[in-house]
Image (cartoon, rainbow, N blue to C red; front, side, top):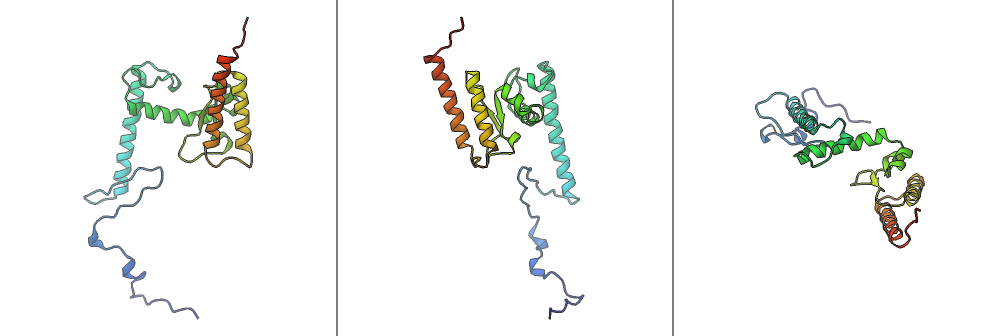
Length: 191
């Protein structure tokens, strides 16, 4: 038989599990990818104030980016040259993050292949502690770059997809070194 429910005068759950009101505010851990939020003194709904502070900071960052783009007469973030015209490093970081997210939308895998890079997120793979962009433009021969891209794409689609980026980086580095060797030792006659 299950135990009887507690009487209505009993505090439930037990008081030992409740926070001590005299202990002061407790900080919650911010979820991954979120800014930590500090408690606000003076009462009120601190979540609203914290969100307003973050929104104001975000708007300031975007205004800084827009002002820099206007000053440099940049029509698109693709034309933005990082570190030029006195643009702040933080403004460049915002532009890079926006460009990274847009690259996933604006480039299909065949277009990425033509542009000389591979996005692992196109294949549903995101390695821990790294971006999904793999730059293959360091491989000087187009045929070798395409061969490397095809091999990496098949590797990322396969059931034996690596769990870390090590094999992908090793293959890219080897292809860059092979391309440099071929350019010096076996130049193409274009006459």
